[in-house]
Image 1: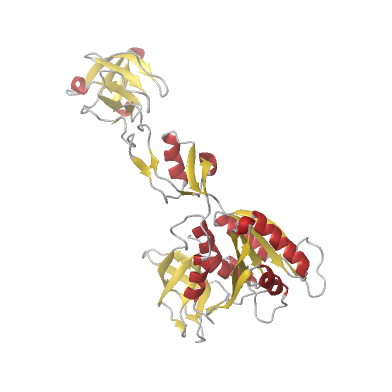
Image 2: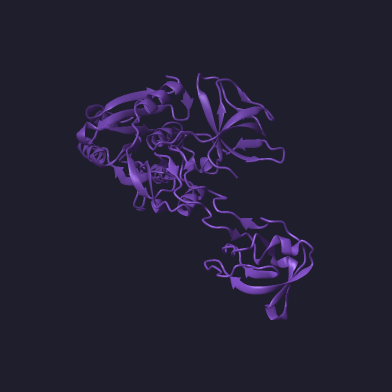
Length: 407
């Protein structure tokens, strides 16, 4: 067996960065910016009211309550042509431009309409600048709003839209081909014959790839036929940035996957000191122009396949897409029940259900059956508890948890 760190380093060092593309902002969510973004305009571009109410001269309401003449009304998207004089006010809506001469807004709750709206009683005094958003209050033209390496989140996309950016330079999304292998797999819903099982890994991995931000090319289930598998993999390498397979990497497995990949790719077949997901394969398929296309061979047991994806495939794909943070968050947690194991020279990844408690700590308990085939028990897991070689963790003991989701 080899250490987990050695397998990880091997994979990451051979997962090439993807090209930078000009991506429309509407399709950039989750991408990593490859260039700094400098604002070309102020946000907001003009002084505007932060409240619904009345635009006033602060000096006129210093001795509130006072009554003022209402000389105009302005809504967001419009502008007043009035220059406010002494003793006057303009009824104004949130976001509307401040009229000339006004230096403050009074919220409607502190006012009373008089004479059918021709006049207004201002119930409290305000100082100059009250409830006024000045030009560039959020973003000033010429400032670097986001640096290269920033992930386009919904909020980042909103800011980019606010400064008029419709296209960004970013590392493009990985196109990942995924397939499962095995004559025993049934994917069409037909009745099972003796020795057959229903396909689950492919469905699971499609979702995991999409969750990692990849575009998924579903190649389906490939039977245990060397020529057919070779054709599928060669075709995938011509169009995909990476290939993920499930099944056929364990010691003693029927060796169709090994035979084909050993022939057409530069492979390393690994036995990693972890449980589950000890067997793992990684290599490079020749792509167009001999561009290397990583191929990640995951185990066939569904839980092993999922854990292997989380520990090796997901970080590799995120590295290819320019992410600085490759792994899911790992938190210091507390075991609410004993998490037992036996010494065997491996790190165990125990599927657990966890949540943050009132004490601010992340509390975990076993998700149920820990067999590498028991996907149903794993499906509800929110984290993987990391148990170093030894006897495990006692109740109330500390444990590191890799978060799969946060609830």
